[in-house]
Image (tube, rainbow, N blue to C red; front, side, top):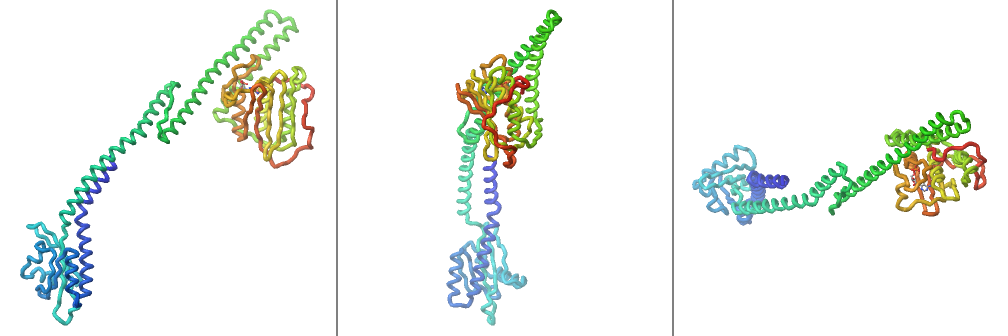
Amino acid sequence: MIFTILILALLWVFQYFFLQNYYQSAKKRDMTLAAARLSANAGSGDFDSLLQETAFKNAMNVKVVDEMGNQLTNVNNLGSFSLLAKDDYGTKQFELIGKLEDSGKATYSEVLSNSEFQIKELVLITRLTKYEGESDRYLIIEASIEPLYSTTKIIREQLFYISIILFELAFIVTIIISRRLSKPITELTETAKQFGSGDYDISFTASGYAEVDELSSVLEDAKDEIKKVTDLRKELIANVSHDLRTPLTMVKAYAEMIRDLSGDNPVKREEHLKVIIDESDRLSNLVNDLLAISRMESGNMELNKSEFSIREKLSDCMTRYNLLVEQEGYDIAYIPDDDRTVCADMEKIDQVIYNFINNAINYTGDEKVIRLVQKNKHGCVRVEVTDNGQGISKELLPKVFDRYYRGEKYKRDVVGTGLGLSICKEILKKHDFAFGVTSTEGVGSTFWFEIPTVGEKKHSKRQPKEKRTEPPEKQTPPKEK
Ligand code: ADP
């Protein structure tokens, strides 16, 4: 509305204040041109008809006078509006001749006005040079510089209608904009306020307007994300407190048992102390995971990259599982490919591989088959950890890398926090490595990541395709992260 008012104000100002000046200067330009044309044709045969034509075409009074101001020829198309026509003795004309001579210029012009008849006119005088030798002759042109009353009236009337139309249009546009834009935004703001106060049962509705729709879908996604994290966090607190309480109860109970019963019995004491140590390990795993994720969340993860042989690293990882293979019947194998040099933070990649393998151990099927596979690709090495467990359903698959997500059915002895895979995700994202999971229910899951190679340098000769892990050396708890 303000914009419309501004445009209208400008139009009215131009109409009222500048129309007069604009009209006057346009008229003067016409008169000067006409004077030049006439004086060029002075003395010629068709001079008189040219005088007529100029006067009629431009609504002017055109006359030729002698040096005393006496009228020789006159074509008056101003009629009774002509002020010079009222100058019966030619005194004004004589005065104009004097002013032209005094100015020393080729033309002289001035504005004449008559307050009685409200008339304002412009007169322009020039000497007709063609008559030299004879007595001097002058050409005087007179034209009204009041814009025609009817014309201005029409323009003002039109301006009035334009103003009304513009006002109405502005009003309609304002309503449309407020309906289509402001209203949905106000609604979104209201919903966002509800959301901010902790109500997650709201929904950001689309309005049919592209940008607002996009905003509402972004807000809806953000709400879903926040809701998910909040739910998972609640679940984690429940899980963590349960997972903390159980080992703590065990530690306390077994410590009391050693104090009261088995203190003097070395065999029993050893047994009870082992339980205490195992449960403490469980606790420290949990606390380590929580610490790691909180460090990553606050953006404090530094990468300490170095180049290393992928084949060496992967075979090295395998040695940790020797005891499991030996004692618990797990079928864990590394399937190597040609060696490649890769560049990454070795310790962190180690953590990822252990996490993948430990999950595979925890969730694998009764055949206990787990494969760590190296697949060389162009420019990178793909590392896959495959198990033959129950797999993960399609709906849950996108969630497994989420913070605090834990599958519903898990064994008590799987000390999980739901943080392992999200730690892997943070590490791989920080490295900018591709990673993911594929799973078929009832068949098993494959967790993988791709680590870029440095050049295509080979470290050692090709080894047999499948390499079983060596006989047991030391045992490492499966869920160490
Ligand atoms: P957790 O501490 O529970 O193992 P993770 O972040 O490591 O947490 O894994 C999240 C969830 O993903 C697990 O609770 C489990 O349900 C699922 N998951 C992870 N690895 C596998 C796997 N190899 N097979 C089936 N499910 C898995």
